[in-house]
Amino acid sequence: MNIHALPSGPIQTNGYLLTDAKRGEAVLIDAPGDILDAIKPILAKEGCKLTELWITHGHWDHTQDAAKVVRATGAKVLAHAADKTLIENPQVMSAFLGGAIKLEPLHVDRWVVQGDKLDALGLEFEVRHVPGHCPGNVLFYVAAVQAAFVGDALFQGSVGRTDLPGGSREVLAKSITTQIYTLPDETTVYAGHGDATTVGAEKKTNPFVRG
Ligand SMILES: [Zn+2]
Ligand SMILES: [Zn+2]
Image 1 (cartoon, rainbow, N blue to C red):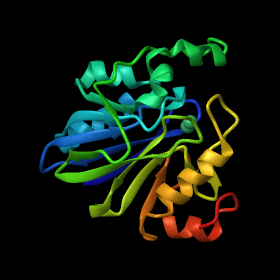
Image 2: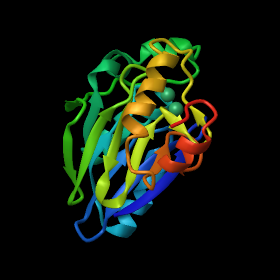
Image 3: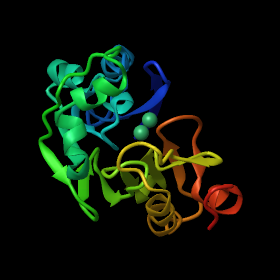
């Protein structure tokens, strides 16, 4: 599996395109603005079809291009129901943005829950619910390649903001200690913004939540 980190959109949100050229399949994790233009040449070059779009959480910067990606590729959409309102009624967030960014409603094909196993690219991914930054943040963990895609729960040297509606500092700290810091230390953490890190490095040095 190839992992393409593609920071896109107005606040450089990481979309992650996972591809397997041998199988001709790809999965996209999050759909920030302009991600469709970024993934098209990669899919063409590797001869992959995008089959699924996994949403880590319902904030606009992670879903801005989602409806466009679905129209272009027919990908099935997965997300957690705790962010249903944000995902299905994006005008909630458009209002926040002063109408500056136009958001389309997104149809979700499958609502995932804690502990779900997803089969994709010949690998098994585990869904873990990590609320606190927002109610519906999930991570996708793939043990076979020691990687976790965590949305905005944890960043290199930082954690997700908790001052937005539905955010909670206590809930986020609990999510990080029980759902992320319990993964093997060598697990690479692919966050919604910024560079990748590892579980072990954050447990030792993260100034907000120590292991
Ligand atoms: Zn967010
Ligand atoms: Zn974000």
